[in-house]
Amino acid sequence: MATSRAIKKPKRDDTQLSNFQSMPERAPSVERVDRPTVARIVAMVGLFLTVLGALAMYAPVWQRSAAISPGMGFFFFSIGISLLLYHAFVEHDLQFRRLYGFVGLALAIGGVVLRLMAFKVGYMSWFLYYGLPALIIGLVVVVAVIRNETEIQFRTLMVNCLGIEGALMIGFCAWRGMVDSGFLPGEGAALLILGLCYVGAYIGQETHGERAYYAAFGLGAAGAVGFIVGTLRSLWPESNFLVPGGLIIIGMSIVYMAVSVCICSDLPIIVLARRDLAAYFYSPIGYLVLIGITLYAGLRFLFFALRITQPGEQTFEPIIGEYIFDIWPVFAQMFIVPVLTMRLLSEEKRTGTLEVLMTAPVNEVSVVGGKFMASWIFYMLTWLPWWIFLVSLRYVGGEQFDYLPVLSFMAASAAVSAGLLSMGLFFSSMTANQIIAAVLTFVGVMMHLVLYFLSFQPVINGMPAVHETVRYVNFFDLWQNALGGIIAPRLLVFHISVAIFFLFATIKMLESRKWK
Image (cartoon, rainbow, N blue to C red; front, side, top):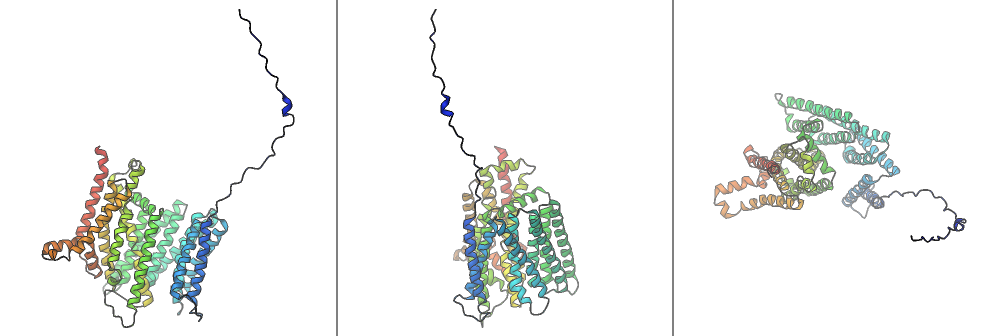
């Protein structure tokens, strides 16, 4: 039997802890709020450019000479306002929010006051030069503040101001347009669009779903009443209300009803179209396209206005053709269409959300139709800046011009864009890479331009049937005819057929997932 040996362990020495002192208590660390330093620097530059541009623009009024011309002053002023608006959208500080909020409300209310002053003779120019820009800038500033506002009462105040002011604009235009037919082609069209923007901002920012629903329903009801009244008055015997006042109020009424249906309807295709249309405004793509189109349309209008206002310059109807028709708008389509369609289905495939979407109670027809409607509506909105500039020409110049080419061109553009966008949607459904989808769409749009140049070749001219076919296929010739006031349904058949074909092909492309 083995004997065990005791293991001696050293005793614990507690004397080492006798002088221990705990660390003093400290308050929990405070996280420093991230300050938008870059945005505030941008705001300072914007404020400087805004003041500099305003002084340069008003120097001739004060009979003072300035080193900067009024034209460059307007350019600096526009850049400064854009930089301040950027700061308003990204600033979260309470003091800045309140400052921008009160400035936005002051601009919006000031525009209304200037319009009320315009009932007196001599004040209409004040509303034109100050009131309309104040209404537009005020709307943007208030929406920017609402996005970042956390206090419920102040946010509700601004949202309600937008809704009330939008309703007043629409009601005033409806009443004044029926009394004075010359009101709609100028100021009335601008106020109808602004009223829709104000009401749309109210509906989009209203947190109470029931109020937003009733506001959208009321917008559709106003559109239905305007459509019925405008149609009846236009069809009245010996009435000259149809052109252009009747067309404006009927067209805007249709837009109001369409917006109301898109907001209130629960149909899957409408819901998906509303979702994808909102996605354009939640991404930089939509804003970049709209800003680029607005700047380009502004330059085109500037050169066009300078040309027709030169002494001794004679212009012949339709003058709209000189404003729109050029090779550069066609080049713009080669980039706009791919940008709008490249991510519609390819991004859904890349991120895997397409499979999740198809588990919802929707089918391939609803998905394709909703995405096509969203891209088509957004594309048609890109033409809005062009026509707003034309409204200003009619309002400032005081001379009437032929509006029928505008209607024929919009009909042609609607058909052409349907074909091009459906083609881009089809290419987007073929791949999960947005760049590949954009390149394929770019090549497809470029083929229209190639066909246009082929129509001038002697070989093509020697074959009348081929020459006529080439002219029917490319949209450049269709634009040219439409801007001349010449439009026929047979000229739109090809482009509508292309749209139907590519939409059908896209549906089958999505259904092919089930064949594997």
